[in-house]
Length: 351
Image (cartoon, rainbow, N blue to C red; front, side, top):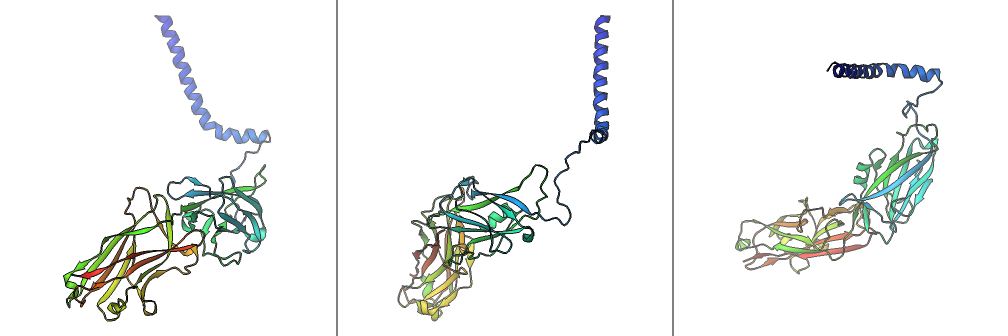
């Protein structure tokens, strides 16, 4: 019994001694290490910091990734892009790439005259199937990228997606480094512009349309033939009047307070253009340029009626059983700049 007690006591002492050693070392180690390293001539490696007033110049490798807006999978539009990085003057080329296959990078020299500022331009070719998303890309790569107004950097009449690339946050090269390396994550929306169509759910009728008091009516429908996880860009929305005589409903005041909504976009101030017999609902800055298009994206799990339209009027003084027959027309542009239109005939009918 006494032998067992003696061994237990020894073990207890050893445990207490070990704990005491750990506590002492935790206190003493930070104080002792600098002294020992100094005596031995070993300089600890400080963390890389940007000295006040320092701006990086030197070799730079820019890794390029593209991600799918739908599910953050890496995309490889390897036949669809022309990427250029420019120096601060916006003219001198830092480096180029013509594919994005998941392993692409542009390497070049940042000059001191750049003051840490470069520019990134992305152009499409005729085979592209992805829309590049300027704002989303800048948000994800906010350390380096700021979305700028599109720019025709190669003077071919087509505007490129354009960002400022700011590397002023880079620290000086450390021992063993020959270049700095950064990664830019560019986001894309896969394009689906084939076979798009509207399906009407409500073409309003009312016996009160032939009355003197204005009544509110709204036509409704939704977009079909779009694959989930894809989308398209619209550059113009119109309400045309192809039926002869329909323009008089507007000009005589039988129809007023017209507004149009597509998805969450509602336009309440429409421009009546009598020469074209249409309401111009909305138009991009330049309808021939993909970069100005308005994005419509079929997100995960939102259902097949994800994109709806509404056309609202106030109507009165229709002839008995008469109809007003506008056509909702949207102009779609694909990533390569090819334009197509989608139309839906709408009726507002007195009964």
